[in-house]
Image (tube, rainbow, N blue to C red; front, side):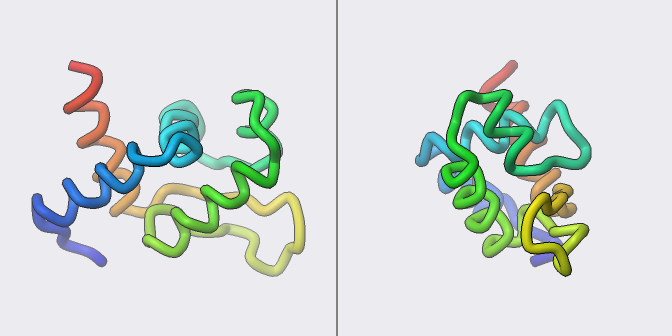
Length: 96
């Protein structure tokens, strides 16, 4: 999903902000290069299952990549270039 055009970036941004758990996760990504569901859940007072579901959704949309796919738990994730673009756009549109 490299070389996103403005429209698909807008669509992804709307997809992120339309569901609270996704917005919470993207907000958390601003402060962390590498994240784990349990850490984000703890920081945001969400259940680990809630954050894990958001992580799975982000992974399906190519917004994040799992660094430790061989592990069953305590997986670590980073933003993909697409995820970074969406975060940058989100910060520009909602934090200016």
